[in-house]
Image (cartoon, rainbow, N blue to C red; front, side, top):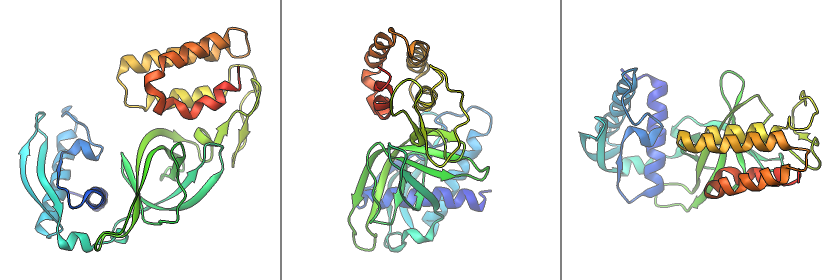
Length: 280
């Protein structure tokens, strides 16, 4: 049985994805929508079934058409040649639940607030006046009062096409969850070993060399990067070495070593380079 919230989430994601690529047809599996790639025997198969129920229901309602389902390599449901019907294309984004988001620039200032359809890998913004750039951070408050943060990787503007309204489709990288108004782009270094600026929040940290928000946030970004365990461990070890050396002559060497280790992962670490370089 698929509950209303699950239906709204999956259906919004599917319509947004199909609208962005229309008239191209897609092949889709649950992992494309943030679900696990393999059945762990602890409820993943049930989530796959709920996702499949939504796709099948949307087909019965005439919102999408597709071939399938079949089973993928891990037993997950798989649909192919999936596309929006005329009825599906006539739906606008107001049919689906949207989250209020803040777009936070790398310097911690809030560019704008708007509404968006948020999915694990991308968001859809119907407000085409929105200012959004690579390296910005998207924040949304979740029910427990904290904020979920995403790094903007690739914002793309899509022109109106038939009945599909113009919109932004934004590829994301999830950074993690922070107390409201803290961490991520809200906290950054301006000069020296201890200088910090906190936007919309109180600085409760202890002001000592090496205990700097940039290292904590960088660790969180690496942890949530999707890299494999070996890559994460290597980068986090370099980050700890940098933090231990902050304020000492050896920091420059540790910084250069980190840059070498992270050379292939600049999409993840580049937002933190300006803050790190102020410690040199």
